[in-house]
Length: 186
Image 1 (cartoon, rainbow, N blue to C red):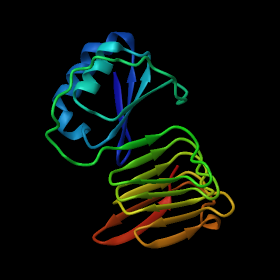
Image 2 (cartoon, rainbow, N blue to C red):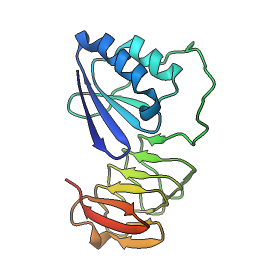
Image 3 (cartoon, helix red, strand yellow):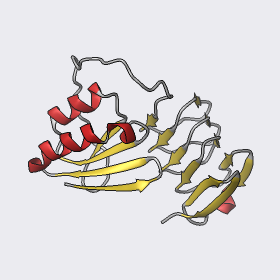
């Protein structure tokens, strides 16, 4: 099993069939850290791992090796367990946000579909845009990633406005000692 942190709020798990027990042990021993992150699980879908992640209320997505999403079976009877941490959950949006749609969340947000012109996204947590931004996105968290912004796209990070021309390359935004920084994110 290989695990690497690919962003400030995201971990990627590269799973092989033989890694099932190692993955379950890793998740159990690192649950306190992982509960604030989005987990990207690359490899073959495993029902035992899925049940364990649902039981622990960990935000996760199953992806193919080439990082494209795939549909996973829905597990109906996952046992519920009260959450120890009442922090807002991570919102994961896999489809495009259409013109006229408005999404607001108290926690972190991850977008795999484009944010179209006329669409608005407001998050009080961290924000990760892995598809083009043509609408408005306002993030108030400690970090953000914007992969690309098309003509008319407007990104606001902690009150600072960045227009589409700023995004010649993917950008990472973060706060250090109250100062906002941006850097190319490759």
